[in-house]
Length: 199
Image 1: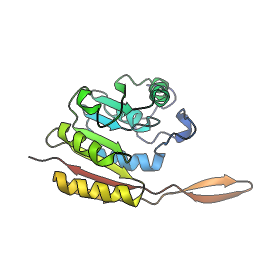
Image 2: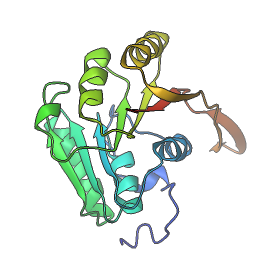
Image 3: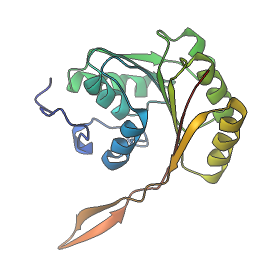
């Protein structure tokens, strides 16, 4: 394991990841919640669709040493950023796929038992196609940053008959130094929805 992160607990500090301006990154506190909802096993197969900076893929790669992580990102520069972050932490079990969901999902390797989707467009189509590939008893975790995506996810979960649904809307404030003062700054809130695919 890289000397950048010599611990086994999740929650890598944000500043240790290489970042690009304008590319979203799941903040550490939110990432911890997302990883908890994924309920990964040491040998899990995770599809991270819309992987962005690759923070979830990296953390999952560390948590699942016998597993396979597939990080999907449509932009070549961002996909290369994920590869760089995997290299920073010496992660060997993450495969980065450049492609646009949902069209690329049918070509992805391995059948996932966990799928993580960052809310985006076309969200309904991505959810439906991802669900088609999810193993029975697999878990689906989706985030929404606005009311429209929250509504779309809720509708799709009902349509797909997602079971054991859980939802959270965490409120996180971080202590930051501004000049000579320490103040609490809010992290942008998101909704986290999860559920299972049962027979």
